[in-house]
Image (cartoon, rainbow, N blue to C red; front, top):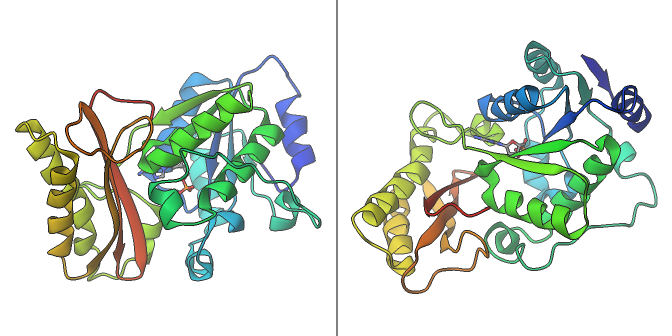
Length: 283
Ligand code: AMP
């Protein structure tokens, strides 16, 4: 496994044998089984696998969140080596954003709701860095998690609109045995907050159960989730959503499919989770 900070090294590896297919897994590091599920899928579907590890400052809307974000490069590299990864790019900030950097990618519509509304500038940061990653690696396929459902929809939109020559693959959410969606941020939870973090999955499960009993009203599904989060003293709701899986517009009235999603602060840690009901859309 070759680990580098430079764009030149990534390009040299990528194009040493141009006929080989490459899978790219973009990450911010502090890897867990969720990330590794993407790596394994990439490993199974491509001749070579590249992973980027970069805590992208421009996608953080809160400085404290950026500063608190965990970083463990050595451990990450050991995990990736064991998965048979070929190339790791862990650039410095100045390599990704050299002095004078002034070009950003903005996806207009699908970024407006949910995470885009709650975290101004977040998706502009995500799409800018992912566009750069796509240009540096020029992968055959790029792998993203359904954990970040809106991010996956935004990146699909960007890839389509800007004609990136690659396939976007979205992989299922990987959870802890008790149901908590895996996240690098889970490490920041205090011991007494860890059980409270299960409230996200509990709320999604309750809304799913209502759906399976015939509930189709968007507002009633949101109300079920809100009530469960309100009952957890250590949790503070940021937003809850029952949205069209493709447009991400909130559902008023009856739905035939829905993306249920939420962001919840547990203590100081902001967690997100989601589930798809009914016919699965591309989100
Ligand atoms: P991050 O390091 O948080 O930027 O995540 C890198 C990639 O891993 C993103 O495409 C995430 O959606 C994906 N990912 C993070 N957590 C999970 C999870 N629990 N299950 C599946 N994919 C995940």
